[in-house]
Length: 225
Image (cartoon, rainbow, N blue to C red; front, side):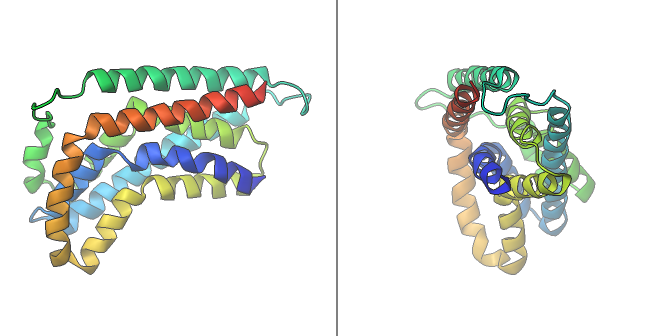
């Protein structure tokens, strides 16, 4: 059962892992003079901001009434999955409509200009702000939490599933930070090129990921009936 759930939640981690603005933020921090402080700070905030919501959703999903007939339809689970799919689709439409038109520069948050002056604490705070309150991340955390918490796993298995989810979801921040401490000089040129492309294609990438995850949740809702 645990391996099945992990297989179900792994595709969902892409929605958090491939967050262009977040990846751009960590790249800019690693290119800044305070990289050895801000990189780890941002990573700590990002991990906490990813782990806390999914853990809470697992807890609340575990409070749902158990499905009496394991062979029959689970209407409660189906409705939750359908609702999450609908919200993800609406968010995908919003992202697509807000994309920059051809030839326009992608608007970037004002805080990016101040990254060079960030401390460990400010970087940690930014990691939390970019993870916890964002609708996309919350919907994905809710989707994963429903799958894990509603599977009837033991506490140890739930912890294992959440750990796998968090590690995969934060991998695109974790890997650059770790790699920076191993080979800082060799990473500067690739980071410069990558962050410009990601900033430009942020809306398109996010729209595609949200649509894929919505389809996954729709499929889970159908299979619950």
